[in-house]
Image 1 (cartoon, helix red, strand yellow):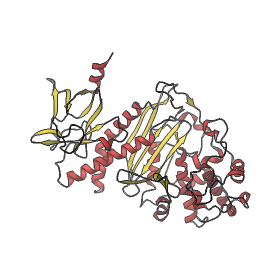
Image 2 (image 1 turned 120 degrees about the horizontal axis):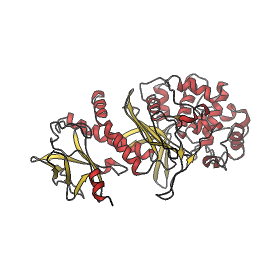
Image 3 (image 1 turned 180 degrees about the vertical axis):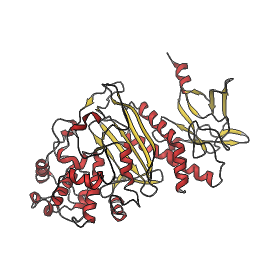
Amino acid sequence: MTDDRTAQTLRSIAPYLADWASFQAAYHGIPGLQLAVGRRGEVFVDLAWGKADVETGEDLTSDHLFRVASHSKTFTGVMVMQLVERGELRLDDRVGDLVPELDGSRAAGVTVRELLGHQAGIIRDSSDGDFWQHHRPFLDRAEVLECVRAEGVVFEPNEHFKYTNIGYSLLGIIIEQVTGKTYDEVARVAVVEPLGLTRTGTELDPARAAEYAAGHTGRIAHGDARRVIPHVDTRAMAAATGWYSTATEMVRYGAAHVYGDTTLISDASKRIMQRDESRVAVRGKELGRYGVGIEVGKVGDREVVGHSGGYPGHITRTWIDPVDGIVVSALTNAVDGTAGQIANGVIQLINLALAAADEVAAGGVVAGASGKGGDPAPGVPADAPVGRFANLWGVADVVVLGGILHTINVRAAEPAEVAQRLVVSDGRLVQEPVAGFGTVGEPVQTDRDADGEIVSVRIGAMTSWPIEQYRSRTAG
């Protein structure tokens, strides 16, 4: 697909991506959601939905700050790779040679690369990780080093992939040892200033306390009330989990991981960070993949890199296509936030739209309208029932993605898995005539009033109504 067609398609579906994500957040009862979608410097979606604080009722904005937690590891990875590029550090340097306090300890022989790739065998959070629920402060420098000395080594290096926040905290200490500066000072020069970020930093900033979106507890049962969780300093663990940002600035940062953008690191360093360092599998089932300072994944057929984040009260996820340039960042402000599900779903919708646009461009179908509620165009009937409809069994969107009509189960976590196309056959709009368990091949019937407004639609066997009409019909 050409860059122009990709950008045009993303612009056309941007309103629907925001609409779908907002529905998902509301459906799952998340207090607030920031979502940004960008590509090569252009931001297509900049969504702020819901509340920054459910106790005060403050509305969430695109400027509210979120703790992006383990996204911090990617920032730390970039900082390490910059030191490697300048010859100030090597990936095979040993911890004992870099941090004198650890010389002679069991962890002394662990390398920088093994720490970055979670192959060092280091304990995850110490034997008392209750800082994750604010029962104690996060560890300071002395406590991190004592943890590594006393209980840090669980596996031998490269014996197993073992995710470790203590290991990344140690990388923060290594950065300070090598540079003679604080982690925050290095981060500002290495990442924040080159990208012109004004709402991103390494740690809780008391001077900006009013700008942070509140964190909220999760719900054990559906009707449980949420409580606000205060923000705290992560101290010497900032390199693993301390950073804050916004969805739009995470998209700007994500773009620096795309090949061809050398603002932060070279493409050679990106190849090291983004190739599979570990395929994480247990009893034959793959659980995920990890590179050198960054997570590696796949959404549909799209290979992506990025990270998730879990901080007390905030759950976040950013995915980056380092070749095509698409970046999606979803930030939620509750312990049970569905940021990963929303980010994955948005990428699935993008994949559907781009595949459809390719078919249209290849002449497989005639180009149609773009975006939910867009003006009809050739190939999409003028009376196509574009909109959101509901009946007893669910909620469905009829939306044009990439020039082709689709029905989307808007409740579904993976919209691409249940999406269906609507096509014109023998002059009638029908569900695509393919094999399936549903009402495939059957006609779409639309009932309109005298003003041309949709009263109901029958996609297959059952009648559905515009969403607000359905709510009125079922009220009480």
